[in-house]
Image (cartoon, rainbow, N blue to C red; front, side):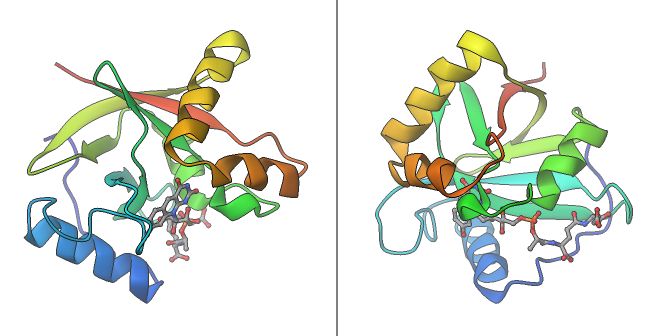
Length: 148
Ligand code: F42
């Protein structure tokens, strides 16, 4: 694992609880967004100021072993902090989709590639389309690939 350091749990109780239960059960429990039945992954980044490890549940948008990370934050006007963490260090990231996390690197998508992944994201989680309508920012889509 490249990501080592002190874990700082999210200030949001429900996010903290989801991460804890997902990890404790190896992804068997707390593996969906609330009661939607739609699967999530756990993404660990390094805080770009604190240097502490941050764990963020995101929707699971998988294709050929890669994962889209959609910085939607429910259509809020500003990007989520984890997006800035990943822009600051695109190689400081692990993805957990099941029992074990794996090291990854991310890159932000543009153009046709973003369009393709955006379609997959909306297919996996239709509310993303509404989130994009709610905000003037173009919602960033990053793709995480496994590091060998
Ligand atoms: N959010 C999404 O954006 N997309 C999704 O697909 C998504 C799905 C999802 C599914 C389940 C679920 O439980 C939550 C889901 N969320 C999704 C919400 C997501 O988990 C995050 O809570 C949300 O995106 C907000 O991310 P955030 O990084 O802005 O988190 C805030 C609340 C947060 O934890 N902030 C920390 C804090 O202490 O306020 C800071 C974290 C941090 O990294 N700080 C940095 C540091 O150095 O430590 C620097 C801070 C700075 O000022 O730059």
